Length: 133
Image 1 (cartoon, rainbow, N blue to C red):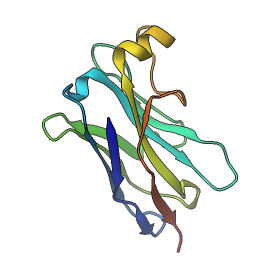
Image 2 (cartoon, helix red, strand yellow):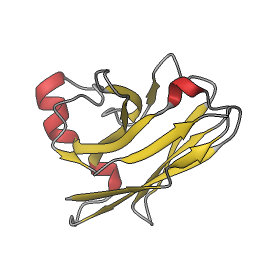
Image 3 (spheres, rainbow, N blue to C red):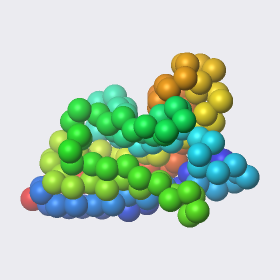
Image 4 (cartoon, rainbow, N blue to C red):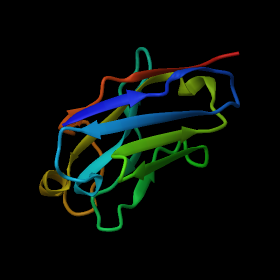
């Protein structure tokens, strides 16, 4: 499975960006995967930003720092996951990564309904987001 992240760039505070993550190399649809976005700022640990969980409804979890500003979505037909970033702040500056793992593996490791973790099997290459005036 290959993940290709794109859409990063420079944006002013209060602006918007949309990141994309194209999934390829698998015959399984996106519904077979737990998939989400992480970010890592210089000198900081990688943190989970948004994620589709492993439950049947595909419920979503967000980091508290992005709730109300970021929205994760996916297009199963296009095999692409998006992160819409609105009202961005300088502290959103980071390299953003998409990550995925099979639902069956995530559930086996963390139980039904568990979400993204640093132990995800597949990672994209990262896309830089810089928020500054």
